[in-house]
Amino acid sequence: MLTIQDIQGARERIAEGVVHTPCPESIPLSELCGCRVWSKLDYLQRTGSFKERGALNALLQLDEAARRRGVVAASAGNHALGLAWHGKRLGIPVTVVMPRFAPLIKASTCEKLGARVIKAGASFAEARKRADQEAEAGGLRYVHGFDDPAIIAGQGTMALEVLEQVPGVEAIVAPVGGGGLIAGVALAVKSLRPEVQIIGVEAERAANFSAARRAGRPVATEPRNTLADGLATGGVGENAFALADPRIDELVQVSEADLAMAVFRLIELEKSVVEGAAAAPLAAFIGGQLTGLSGKRVVLLLCGGNIDLTILDRIIEHGLVRDGRLFRFTAVISDRPGGLAALTRLIADAGASVKQIAHDRAFSGPEVAQVLATCVVETSDRAHIDHLLAALQAAGLEVVASSRQDEPGRVAG
Image 1 (cartoon, rainbow, N blue to C red):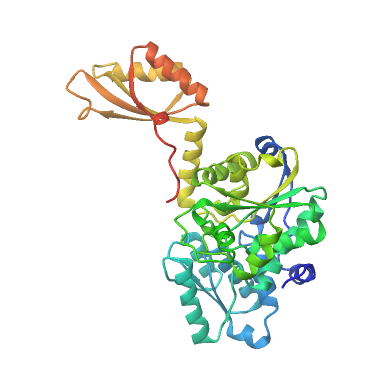
Image 2 (cartoon, one colour):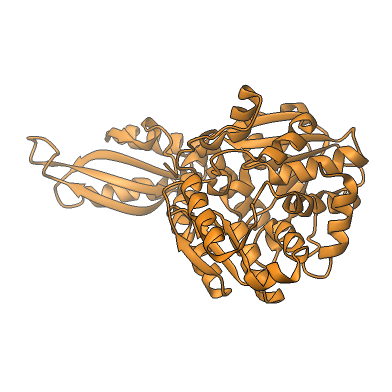
């Protein structure tokens, strides 16, 4: 079993190869969360995530024969990126096996860094089977992304930095997938500052640690598609569970809608672009699950920035809709000349801005003098939407549908 000395040794070992990332206090996040918030910006590592810490620590402890043959790992992306980058730096061949759902940006970046990338399996478990086959066939060392002791020790170095950067920290909130990060962080913190709370945050669709706690041991899970793809590991590691379980003070789960909103808020308030897994700590505040931290000094571990850009625009639009800053409605207007102009004038007079308008004559009913106009408009907030709807009603226009009647859409799944 690992000790604090292992984590302190890892810190010395990897010091020249990883970034000592900043941990600034955030006024806007503090106002949003109701406590004093610092953000550990580990997405600023070279490959965009904390995984570099453990990857480098593991690679530096290989013997010469293992270095020549190389290593292999199954990873949804960030562990693979960390191995690929530091393997390239150290001259160690790296093979990574990714599930087919892994974001394209992570696979392509691994290849650019010189790693051999294999896409195999519809789940992490299936990718792991292929990685085991590669290890046996090529005599490669398998480096587990969240359960190898060297990996866990490397991840724990982040906590040592946090304790120095925020001396009065009272709670650290970390995402939980396979458990390697929170295991290393919890071991480091509870060894040096046992009074500091350790809070883990899972995605509802990848609740590996909760499943292990119910069973009393790590069990295989079947995660559904989630914005927090980095947490969808199919289970928590045995070493990680043994280390973290007695040291986690609170474990919560977050929805896909709150994960998306957390990514959105971090872009807007912090100018930080993070992936869904890294946004999980803030999502727990957005979901109202960490009210017990009110007024305390809290550090959020923002530990990954490799979000798939193909979904980023959807996250932003989801956030705008949820804030009442993007609104869609369908109104019945006159199909005579000037009907559309009257509608747009009402929208402008209400202070809203038109993004899209679509006419629907085919399904507007038997009244040939009328047409349905579906409008997407930019508004300031929900009160502004109420003002716009009141203006339309006062003008005698019938609104037959609006996005307010829709359940907020989910970004993933």
